[in-house]
Length: 375
Image 1 (cartoon, helix red, strand yellow):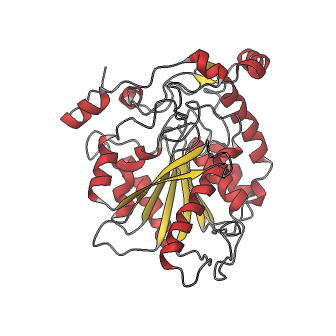
Image 2 (cartoon, helix red, strand yellow):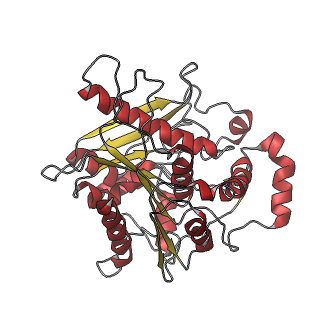
Protein backbone atom coordinates (compact mmCIF):
# COMPACT_ATOMS: atom_id res chain seq x y z
CA UNK A 1 0.00 0.00 0.00
CA UNK A 2 1.54 3.30 -1.10
CA UNK A 3 -1.44 5.58 -0.47
CA UNK A 4 -3.35 6.26 2.74
CA UNK A 5 -5.75 9.08 3.65
CA UNK A 6 -4.00 11.95 5.45
CA UNK A 7 -6.60 14.37 6.80
CA UNK A 8 -9.52 13.59 9.06
CA UNK A 9 -11.90 14.46 6.21
CA UNK A 10 -10.12 12.02 3.89
CA UNK A 11 -10.15 9.24 6.47
CA UNK A 12 -13.88 9.69 7.03
CA UNK A 13 -14.67 9.78 3.31
CA UNK A 14 -12.49 6.88 2.22
CA UNK A 15 -13.84 4.67 5.01
CA UNK A 16 -17.30 4.79 3.41
CA UNK A 17 -17.95 1.48 1.62
CA UNK A 18 -18.90 1.36 -2.03
CA UNK A 19 -22.47 0.22 -2.77
CA UNK A 20 -22.48 -3.57 -2.60
CA UNK A 21 -22.37 -5.38 -5.97
CA UNK A 22 -25.67 -7.04 -6.85
CA UNK A 23 -24.92 -9.18 -9.89
CA UNK A 24 -28.27 -10.96 -10.11
CA UNK A 25 -30.16 -7.68 -9.82
CA UNK A 26 -27.88 -6.15 -12.45
CA UNK A 27 -28.48 -9.00 -14.88
CA UNK A 28 -32.23 -8.60 -14.29
CA UNK A 29 -31.96 -4.79 -14.50
CA UNK A 30 -33.70 -4.42 -11.12
CA UNK A 31 -32.21 -1.55 -9.08
CA UNK A 32 -30.65 -2.45 -5.75
CA UNK A 33 -31.60 -1.03 -3.28
CA UNK A 34 -35.15 -1.20 -4.61
CA UNK A 35 -36.50 2.10 -5.84
CA UNK A 36 -33.08 3.73 -6.28
CA UNK A 37 -32.22 3.97 -10.00
CA UNK A 38 -28.70 5.16 -9.08
CA UNK A 39 -28.04 1.79 -7.44
CA UNK A 40 -27.00 3.32 -4.11
CA UNK A 41 -24.68 6.01 -5.50
CA UNK A 42 -26.80 9.13 -4.99
CA UNK A 43 -26.72 9.01 -1.15
CA UNK A 44 -22.91 8.75 -0.99
CA UNK A 45 -21.03 11.68 0.59
CA UNK A 46 -19.11 14.20 -1.48
CA UNK A 47 -15.34 13.75 -1.78
CA UNK A 48 -13.26 16.19 0.34
CA UNK A 49 -12.11 18.35 -2.60
CA UNK A 50 -15.63 18.32 -3.98
CA UNK A 51 -17.04 19.44 -0.62
CA UNK A 52 -14.41 22.19 -0.39
CA UNK A 53 -15.35 23.67 -3.76
CA UNK A 54 -19.02 23.60 -2.81
CA UNK A 55 -18.25 25.35 0.50
CA UNK A 56 -16.11 28.12 -1.01
CA UNK A 57 -17.87 28.80 -4.32
CA UNK A 58 -21.38 29.42 -5.47
CA UNK A 59 -22.76 26.15 -6.79
CA UNK A 60 -25.91 24.55 -8.08
CA UNK A 61 -26.93 20.92 -8.39
CA UNK A 62 -28.91 20.03 -11.47
CA UNK A 63 -30.72 17.01 -12.82
CA UNK A 64 -31.94 16.70 -16.40
CA UNK A 65 -34.39 14.03 -17.50
CA UNK A 66 -33.28 11.85 -20.38
CA UNK A 67 -36.92 11.12 -21.18
CA UNK A 68 -39.38 13.92 -20.35
CA UNK A 69 -42.30 11.48 -20.53
CA UNK A 70 -41.20 8.61 -18.28
CA UNK A 71 -38.89 10.68 -16.03
CA UNK A 72 -37.18 7.54 -14.75
CA UNK A 73 -33.65 8.27 -16.03
CA UNK A 74 -31.62 11.38 -15.39
CA UNK A 75 -28.16 12.88 -15.58
CA UNK A 76 -26.93 14.69 -12.48
CA UNK A 77 -24.54 17.61 -12.72
CA UNK A 78 -22.94 20.38 -10.69
CA UNK A 79 -22.29 24.00 -11.62
CA UNK A 80 -19.41 25.73 -9.83
CA UNK A 81 -19.32 29.52 -10.08
CA UNK A 82 -16.09 31.49 -10.69
CA UNK A 83 -14.06 32.50 -7.64
CA UNK A 84 -15.36 35.66 -5.96
CA UNK A 85 -13.35 38.67 -7.06
CA UNK A 86 -12.29 37.10 -10.36
CA UNK A 87 -13.45 38.60 -13.64
CA UNK A 88 -16.32 36.48 -14.90
CA UNK A 89 -15.45 35.53 -18.47
CA UNK A 90 -19.06 34.56 -19.21
CA UNK A 91 -17.74 31.21 -20.37
CA UNK A 92 -18.41 27.65 -19.20
CA UNK A 93 -15.98 24.74 -19.15
CA UNK A 94 -18.00 21.52 -19.23
CA UNK A 95 -15.68 18.71 -18.13
CA UNK A 96 -16.49 15.04 -18.82
CA UNK A 97 -14.90 12.48 -16.51
CA UNK A 98 -13.37 9.18 -17.57
CA UNK A 99 -14.78 5.67 -17.31
CA UNK A 100 -15.47 4.37 -13.77
CA UNK A 101 -15.22 7.91 -12.37
CA UNK A 102 -17.57 10.79 -11.49
CA UNK A 103 -17.85 14.49 -12.25
CA UNK A 104 -16.96 15.80 -8.80
CA UNK A 105 -13.46 14.32 -9.08
CA UNK A 106 -12.53 17.34 -11.22
CA UNK A 107 -12.76 19.51 -8.09
CA UNK A 108 -9.06 18.99 -7.38
CA UNK A 109 -8.24 20.79 -10.65
CA UNK A 110 -11.16 23.23 -10.78
CA UNK A 111 -9.51 26.15 -8.94
CA UNK A 112 -7.21 26.63 -11.93
CA UNK A 113 -10.22 27.66 -14.02
CA UNK A 114 -12.50 29.14 -11.35
CA UNK A 115 -9.78 31.55 -10.24
CA UNK A 116 -9.38 32.64 -13.87
CA UNK A 117 -13.07 33.55 -14.12
CA UNK A 118 -14.46 30.45 -15.84
CA UNK A 119 -17.56 28.67 -14.63
CA UNK A 120 -17.16 24.89 -14.41
CA UNK A 121 -19.92 22.38 -15.13
CA UNK A 122 -19.32 18.73 -14.23
CA UNK A 123 -21.89 16.11 -15.28
CA UNK A 124 -21.98 12.55 -14.03
CA UNK A 125 -22.15 10.52 -17.23
CA UNK A 126 -24.99 7.96 -17.48
CA UNK A 127 -24.28 4.98 -15.25
CA UNK A 128 -21.76 6.98 -13.21
CA UNK A 129 -21.88 9.06 -10.05
CA UNK A 130 -25.33 10.34 -9.07
CA UNK A 131 -26.83 9.71 -12.49
CA UNK A 132 -29.12 6.75 -13.03
CA UNK A 133 -28.15 3.36 -14.38
CA UNK A 134 -26.18 0.27 -13.41
CA UNK A 135 -22.69 1.40 -12.47
CA UNK A 136 -20.65 1.81 -15.67
CA UNK A 137 -23.14 -0.11 -17.78
CA UNK A 138 -23.15 1.85 -21.05
CA UNK A 139 -24.38 -0.26 -23.98
CA UNK A 140 -24.61 2.76 -26.30
CA UNK A 141 -21.79 5.31 -26.28
CA UNK A 142 -23.70 7.92 -28.26
CA UNK A 143 -25.93 8.26 -25.20
CA UNK A 144 -23.01 9.90 -23.40
CA UNK A 145 -22.84 12.77 -25.91
CA UNK A 146 -26.62 13.14 -25.84
CA UNK A 147 -26.53 13.37 -22.05
CA UNK A 148 -23.76 15.98 -22.03
CA UNK A 149 -25.61 18.15 -24.53
CA UNK A 150 -28.78 17.78 -22.47
CA UNK A 151 -26.82 19.17 -19.51
CA UNK A 152 -25.43 22.04 -21.63
CA UNK A 153 -28.97 22.88 -22.74
CA UNK A 154 -30.38 22.67 -19.21
CA UNK A 155 -27.69 24.96 -17.80
CA UNK A 156 -28.18 27.46 -20.63
CA UNK A 157 -31.94 27.42 -20.12
CA UNK A 158 -31.50 28.13 -16.42
CA UNK A 159 -29.24 31.08 -17.29
CA UNK A 160 -31.67 32.33 -19.93
CA UNK A 161 -34.61 32.25 -17.55
CA UNK A 162 -32.74 34.60 -15.25
CA UNK A 163 -32.29 37.24 -17.96
CA UNK A 164 -35.34 36.73 -20.18
CA UNK A 165 -36.62 39.90 -21.76
CA UNK A 166 -39.97 38.42 -22.71
CA UNK A 167 -42.06 35.41 -21.82
CA UNK A 168 -41.08 32.26 -23.70
CA UNK A 169 -37.91 33.63 -25.30
CA UNK A 170 -34.58 31.86 -24.73
CA UNK A 171 -31.12 33.12 -25.66
CA UNK A 172 -27.67 31.76 -24.88
CA UNK A 173 -25.78 34.07 -22.52
CA UNK A 174 -22.43 32.27 -22.12
CA UNK A 175 -19.90 30.56 -24.36
CA UNK A 176 -19.49 26.80 -23.85
CA UNK A 177 -16.38 24.65 -24.24
CA UNK A 178 -16.59 20.88 -23.77
CA UNK A 179 -13.58 19.08 -22.32
CA UNK A 180 -12.85 15.61 -21.02
CA UNK A 181 -10.26 12.92 -20.48
CA UNK A 182 -10.11 9.32 -21.73
CA UNK A 183 -13.74 8.17 -22.14
CA UNK A 184 -14.61 11.76 -21.27
CA UNK A 185 -12.30 12.91 -24.06
CA UNK A 186 -14.17 10.64 -26.45
CA UNK A 187 -17.47 11.98 -25.13
CA UNK A 188 -16.34 15.59 -25.55
CA UNK A 189 -15.19 14.84 -29.10
CA UNK A 190 -18.46 13.14 -29.99
CA UNK A 191 -20.49 15.95 -28.40
CA UNK A 192 -18.63 18.50 -30.52
CA UNK A 193 -19.09 16.33 -33.62
CA UNK A 194 -22.80 15.82 -33.12
CA UNK A 195 -23.81 19.19 -31.68
CA UNK A 196 -20.98 21.52 -32.67
CA UNK A 197 -22.43 22.90 -35.91
CA UNK A 198 -22.60 26.71 -35.85
CA UNK A 199 -25.88 28.10 -34.51
CA UNK A 200 -27.04 31.72 -34.60
CA UNK A 201 -27.67 32.39 -30.89
CA UNK A 202 -28.41 36.07 -31.46
CA UNK A 203 -31.95 35.06 -32.39
CA UNK A 204 -34.10 34.02 -29.42
CA UNK A 205 -35.80 30.64 -29.54
CA UNK A 206 -39.55 30.73 -29.11
CA UNK A 207 -39.77 27.48 -27.21
CA UNK A 208 -37.89 25.30 -24.77
CA UNK A 209 -37.83 22.46 -27.30
CA UNK A 210 -36.29 24.51 -30.12
CA UNK A 211 -33.61 26.11 -27.98
CA UNK A 212 -30.21 24.83 -29.12
CA UNK A 213 -27.10 26.31 -27.46
CA UNK A 214 -23.93 26.45 -29.52
CA UNK A 215 -20.59 24.88 -28.59
CA UNK A 216 -17.58 27.15 -29.07
CA UNK A 217 -14.89 24.46 -28.95
CA UNK A 218 -13.41 21.45 -27.20
CA UNK A 219 -10.40 20.29 -25.21
CA UNK A 220 -9.74 16.57 -25.53
CA UNK A 221 -7.32 14.94 -23.07
CA UNK A 222 -6.03 11.48 -24.02
CA UNK A 223 -9.32 10.86 -25.88
CA UNK A 224 -10.45 7.30 -26.40
CA UNK A 225 -10.12 7.36 -30.19
CA UNK A 226 -7.70 4.43 -30.40
CA UNK A 227 -6.88 1.75 -27.83
CA UNK A 228 -3.25 1.04 -26.97
CA UNK A 229 -2.24 -2.57 -27.68
CA UNK A 230 -1.49 -3.09 -23.96
CA UNK A 231 -5.16 -2.50 -23.08
CA UNK A 232 -6.97 -4.20 -25.96
CA UNK A 233 -8.55 -7.47 -24.74
CA UNK A 234 -7.39 -10.73 -26.27
CA UNK A 235 -9.36 -11.81 -29.32
CA UNK A 236 -10.67 -14.89 -27.49
CA UNK A 237 -12.02 -12.65 -24.71
CA UNK A 238 -13.73 -10.44 -27.27
CA UNK A 239 -15.33 -13.46 -28.98
CA UNK A 240 -16.59 -14.78 -25.65
CA UNK A 241 -18.01 -11.36 -24.79
CA UNK A 242 -19.90 -11.18 -28.08
CA UNK A 243 -21.38 -14.62 -27.45
CA UNK A 244 -22.64 -13.56 -24.02
CA UNK A 245 -23.69 -9.99 -24.82
CA UNK A 246 -27.35 -10.65 -25.61
CA UNK A 247 -28.02 -12.45 -22.33
CA UNK A 248 -25.46 -10.98 -19.94
CA UNK A 249 -24.61 -7.46 -21.07
CA UNK A 250 -24.04 -6.07 -17.54
CA UNK A 251 -21.69 -8.93 -16.58
CA UNK A 252 -18.25 -7.70 -15.35
CA UNK A 253 -15.83 -9.48 -17.66
CA UNK A 254 -12.52 -7.85 -18.68
CA UNK A 255 -9.74 -6.12 -16.74
CA UNK A 256 -9.30 -3.46 -19.48
CA UNK A 257 -6.98 -0.65 -18.32
CA UNK A 258 -6.37 -1.90 -14.79
CA UNK A 259 -2.78 -1.15 -13.71
CA UNK A 260 -1.96 0.84 -16.85
CA UNK A 261 -3.21 4.33 -15.99
CA UNK A 262 -0.16 5.81 -14.31
CA UNK A 263 3.44 5.20 -13.39
CA UNK A 264 2.40 5.96 -9.79
CA UNK A 265 0.64 2.92 -8.22
CA UNK A 266 -0.87 5.11 -5.50
CA UNK A 267 -3.18 6.64 -8.12
CA UNK A 268 -5.11 3.41 -8.57
CA UNK A 269 -4.99 2.62 -4.86
CA UNK A 270 -6.69 5.91 -4.07
CA UNK A 271 -9.12 5.38 -6.94
CA UNK A 272 -10.10 1.92 -5.67
CA UNK A 273 -10.74 3.26 -2.15
CA UNK A 274 -13.00 6.05 -3.39
CA UNK A 275 -16.62 5.05 -2.62
CA UNK A 276 -17.92 6.94 -5.68
CA UNK A 277 -15.78 5.10 -8.26
CA UNK A 278 -16.30 1.73 -9.91
CA UNK A 279 -13.39 -0.66 -9.44
CA UNK A 280 -14.89 -3.83 -10.90
CA UNK A 281 -14.14 -5.38 -14.27
CA UNK A 282 -15.36 -3.83 -17.50
CA UNK A 283 -18.91 -4.95 -18.27
CA UNK A 284 -19.49 -6.94 -21.46
CA UNK A 285 -21.90 -4.51 -23.13
CA UNK A 286 -19.80 -1.49 -22.16
CA UNK A 287 -16.60 -2.98 -23.55
CA UNK A 288 -18.23 -3.95 -26.85
CA UNK A 289 -19.86 -0.54 -27.11
CA UNK A 290 -16.46 1.10 -26.66
CA UNK A 291 -14.95 -0.90 -29.53
CA UNK A 292 -17.90 -0.17 -31.82
CA UNK A 293 -17.93 3.53 -30.92
CA UNK A 294 -14.24 3.93 -31.69
CA UNK A 295 -14.79 2.48 -35.17
CA UNK A 296 -17.80 4.71 -35.78
CA UNK A 297 -16.26 7.96 -34.57
CA UNK A 298 -13.13 7.43 -36.67
CA UNK A 299 -15.36 7.35 -39.75
CA UNK A 300 -16.68 10.83 -38.84
CA UNK A 301 -13.57 12.71 -37.74
CA UNK A 302 -13.56 14.89 -40.85
CA UNK A 303 -16.88 16.40 -39.76
CA UNK A 304 -15.42 18.05 -36.66
CA UNK A 305 -15.49 21.78 -37.35
CA UNK A 306 -15.28 23.54 -33.98
CA UNK A 307 -11.92 24.79 -32.64
CA UNK A 308 -10.20 22.20 -30.46
CA UNK A 309 -7.09 21.38 -28.45
CA UNK A 310 -5.79 17.81 -28.14
CA UNK A 311 -3.50 16.78 -25.28
CA UNK A 312 -1.93 13.30 -25.17
CA UNK A 313 1.01 11.57 -23.53
CA UNK A 314 3.32 9.49 -25.71
CA UNK A 315 3.68 6.97 -22.88
CA UNK A 316 -0.07 6.31 -22.69
CA UNK A 317 -0.75 2.57 -22.28
CA UNK A 318 -4.54 2.90 -22.38
CA UNK A 319 -5.44 5.17 -25.31
CA UNK A 320 -3.02 5.56 -28.19
CA UNK A 321 -1.86 9.06 -29.08
CA UNK A 322 -1.97 7.99 -32.72
CA UNK A 323 -5.75 8.37 -32.47
CA UNK A 324 -5.26 12.02 -31.55
CA UNK A 325 -2.84 12.47 -34.44
CA UNK A 326 -5.46 11.08 -36.81
CA UNK A 327 -8.10 13.48 -35.49
CA UNK A 328 -5.73 16.40 -36.03
CA UNK A 329 -5.13 15.31 -39.64
CA UNK A 330 -8.72 14.61 -40.61
CA UNK A 331 -10.83 17.20 -38.80
CA UNK A 332 -12.16 19.98 -41.02
CA UNK A 333 -11.65 22.55 -38.28
CA UNK A 334 -9.20 25.27 -39.28
CA UNK A 335 -8.42 26.01 -35.62
CA UNK A 336 -6.93 22.81 -34.22
CA UNK A 337 -3.89 21.98 -32.13
CA UNK A 338 -2.20 18.87 -30.71
CA UNK A 339 0.14 18.90 -27.73
CA UNK A 340 2.10 15.69 -27.20
CA UNK A 341 3.78 15.25 -23.82
CA UNK A 342 6.85 12.97 -24.02
CA UNK A 343 6.53 9.91 -21.77
CA UNK A 344 3.40 11.19 -19.99
CA UNK A 345 1.08 8.30 -19.18
CA UNK A 346 -2.69 8.05 -19.39
CA UNK A 347 -3.73 10.20 -16.46
CA UNK A 348 -2.42 13.57 -17.59
CA UNK A 349 -3.92 15.33 -14.57
CA UNK A 350 -2.24 13.20 -11.91
CA UNK A 351 -1.76 15.36 -8.83
CA UNK A 352 1.87 15.15 -7.71
CA UNK A 353 3.12 14.40 -4.22
CA UNK A 354 5.03 17.71 -4.08
CA UNK A 355 5.54 20.81 -6.22
CA UNK A 356 8.19 19.20 -8.40
CA UNK A 357 6.13 16.05 -8.92
CA UNK A 358 3.09 18.18 -9.77
CA UNK A 359 4.77 20.04 -12.62
CA UNK A 360 3.37 17.67 -15.26
CA UNK A 361 -0.20 18.31 -14.17
CA UNK A 362 0.42 22.05 -13.95
CA UNK A 363 1.83 22.04 -17.48
CA UNK A 364 -1.32 20.44 -18.88
CA UNK A 365 -3.64 22.69 -16.86
CA UNK A 366 -1.73 25.78 -18.01
CA UNK A 367 -1.94 24.63 -21.63
CA UNK A 368 -5.70 24.16 -21.27
CA UNK A 369 -6.16 27.57 -19.66
CA UNK A 370 -3.96 29.36 -22.19
CA UNK A 371 -5.98 27.84 -25.04
CA UNK A 372 -9.27 28.86 -23.42
CA UNK A 373 -8.01 32.41 -22.91
CA UNK A 374 -7.30 32.64 -26.65
CA UNK A 375 -10.79 31.51 -27.58
